[in-house]
Image (cartoon, rainbow, N blue to C red; front, side, top):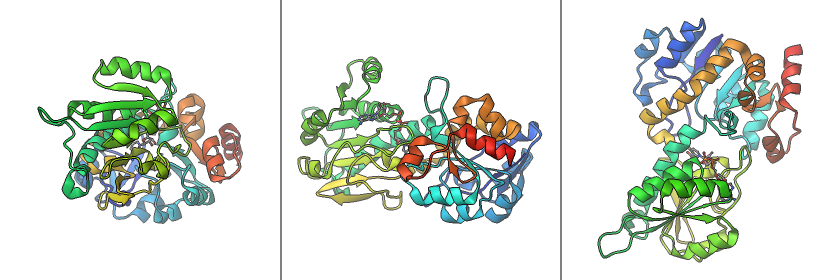
Length: 376
Ligand SMILES: NC(=O)c1ccc[n+]([C@@H]2O[C@H](COP(=O)([O-])OP(=O)(O)OC[C@H]3O[C@@H](n4cnc5c(N)ncnc54)[C@H](O)[C@@H]3O)[C@@H](O)[C@H]2O)c1
């Protein structure tokens, strides 16, 4: 198969979908790889590094999309990229379609087959291609929150860890999954007082053991969250209902009971945001204020640390890229039920039920859609 790796074009996105190690694996397996000139530069990877492992470096995105059958990316395709997609393409990248009606329709109209990193599952039902970026985003969430609490940046002016004789800040993490755990561990490391909220009791049990008394675990009822909000300095939103739009766990009304200058970091912004007042921001302009509360809602947080993130992501995606290249989307989906869960759009049909429901288009089971594709 011919695999294409374009440069990422989303604002402040410096990651790339494949490293030279990935090129080597694919070339050794008999595939061809084309990489856009400069695609790796933001992650510290030179064109020559790709070429040394057997990739062909092409001058622009048109050439890469034109040559490739499978496109491997990081972020959801931007309008220019959607315009380049055709029915012969297999797209493998983050998509986050539930809150993205226009993109979903764009991908449907392209006729391409689109596999989303964030809905691929492993044998335990976990999300192996979301986890590495969630680990990065969780760690950044606390760092960014601590920074935004500084007075010159509009925050309350409180130091997360306090000092002897002065109390530490209170950090509330809502959603104790991969993001929430990493955010909490960094907050614990910075010596804040930490409360982690989740609705899954088994997860709260696991977290309780991991924290060993260094953070409190709390059931995330609406009332319990509301009762804690007046005390907290930093809230990190990290909830996820797989594939679906994020539920709102803090309402606009509730901002009034919070301390002026408190900070909300909405990591779940890529799924539409878990605070009612959230809207996506960029690394260039990461925050805005609503009712005296700073909101940090950067939709591609790991993009800020590409040297870490590109390797963390591609270590996880590589086996799937190889399987898709070796067996095609039908063969790979038949052999790997977890990879099949990643198939969101096939030849104009949406094959992920929560996405179809959120976007308001018909849902077609993936086996049916792939069967039609094979027959076509
Ligand atoms: N902004 C970014 O750059 C970025 C980067 C990585 C991940 N993310 C996003 O972060 C979010 C969390 O990802 P994750 O990997 O930690 O997911 P995860 O599945 O590991 O964890 C989500 C947790 O939320 C809990 N939850 C669900 N509904 C809840 C509710 N109403 N109240 C409290 N808890 C609830 C679940 O029980 C689960 O423990 C996702 O939306 C993901 O897309 C964003």
